[in-house]
Length: 319
Image (cartoon, rainbow, N blue to C red; front, side):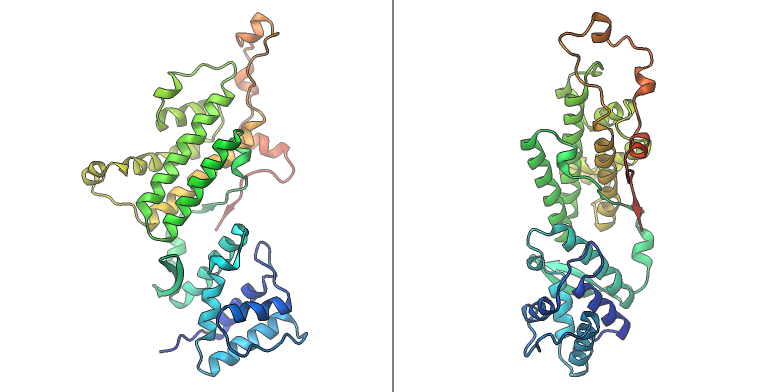
């Protein structure tokens, strides 16, 4: 049986193909025609100068009325990574918007061996309502991790966590996120320590110690510290016996809760990076090198105060 879409759904799919809204991938008229060919359409007409959205939506409706699977092919091509070479931001924005449209009709995009597939799901807004507000990552990894080699490793962990998530490997995704979080916090402690003293040698500090230390020094906010406890718990499931003891296996909802916490922590660390105390200068006076300024702690900005001093700064929470 052919997949059939509501008229309003086809209208929204046409918007995604055209890509007029940032950060979607914008396509010119001739690029839309090429996109439809890559989606597997036969006999795609040349773009004739009609307004792009009208031209695209009319084609989608015509093909559906003809009883073809071309509308479905266009949807699956929108969700195909091959359309977004070196454009991860546009890919993830498109996939999120596409699933937001499809779920209203009881469908969503899943992946099978790396390829997008259209699957049935419960129609409505329930999936969105269950999720905690999504905190967007507003910074790059290099803004958080100053060591280029370590930054590349952290970015790889982030990418692998997303790949695991998209393929349904939710335990692996959470473990990657926990590993990433511990790594960036350890780097921050090592790079920012300055006049402060670690409570114990860095090599002996676990994720809980690092979270407490970062919060105590106002590198991350209280919400990020509290929510990170979930990631710490799930990261420990790298040990199968821990999973058996707890009787819990991470699922899609688990990762949906953990990912915003990682984003929030990275946002906080980037916001406070410039305000963190530098290591003492070799020419500093004894009093300065020992950190005898009684106002040091009070003067250290929080993520929120740093964001207020930056144009357009701050963390944005999306629905």
